[in-house]
Length: 398
Image 1: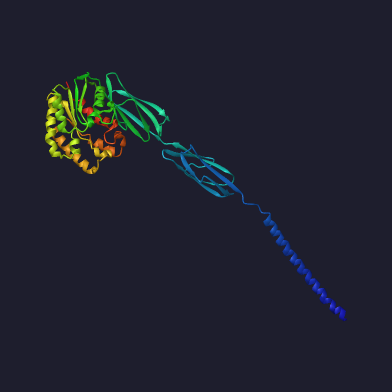
Image 2 (image 1 turned 90 degrees about the horizontal axis):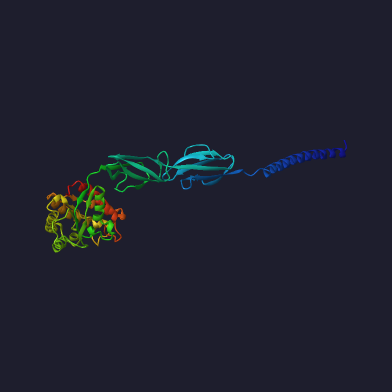
């Protein structure tokens, strides 16, 4: 073997080795570009939109409101009813519970449906008559939708009179409208018609409460009282009011003397003492003046004690006006004065009506206070009258 032949073999081997390396590198490059191609050609993630709403508007809420999800992702939807509504159903998605889960495989429009709560109105009667129900707003055949307005009319049978409402409706007016916002039970009370009672002049003695300071004439409690008496067949020929803002018991008694009033009244009422308390007098010092005035009032009723009735002093501190005084102290003093009034009245067999608790409702209900911020409104006086009229109607005023 010559030297050239020996030299050629290594070169041939090197060529063979380089070829293999080349092919290996080519395979790696092709694999790299293939992977790169596959990645570069991969699709973007598919997104679907969930759109939610409520029906009717403002009947509740639903969450989420609007949101995007990847294809195949699960979406949780929750419905929350507003006050006076209940959840009914879903539109655009299966399920009947407040919370549902759906798979997002397309755009979805989902609506939470709500309906108003329904309440039962139960009516009954005492005596002989009927109650007529008239739907004013948003009624339903099976119970009433929440916030429905219903007008109730008490219709007495012949020979009967409507007297009052009891239960979840109070008062003597008919018809009356009520708002259905809970289960309600209402009774109409009817009484038999009796022969009309005719009474001569009614004398109302007192102070600013009796003349109705800061209210219209028809809102004064003695005027409302006569109106209610007439509804139950007691008619007063005339009304005489002897009262003035600021009067104490002594000043009222003096005015009675000045007027030379004589015992000719068919009915007398007395309400006095608040100005004695307001001006700093204590209850024991008030007693003699009140007793004198009480005895005088009995004589004006023809010595018939039942023809006189006495009202307690309202708690003026509950109005929000305290005149710089402590409201608790005012209430305590008012109670002391009323204790004197009630004791002296009842030992003489005279009817006494405690309207003070009604006046204290003004702490939370300012509609019971007149525009001057101190005296009762016509609404409060009406509550007084409702308390008084039932008992007075039972008295023989002839």
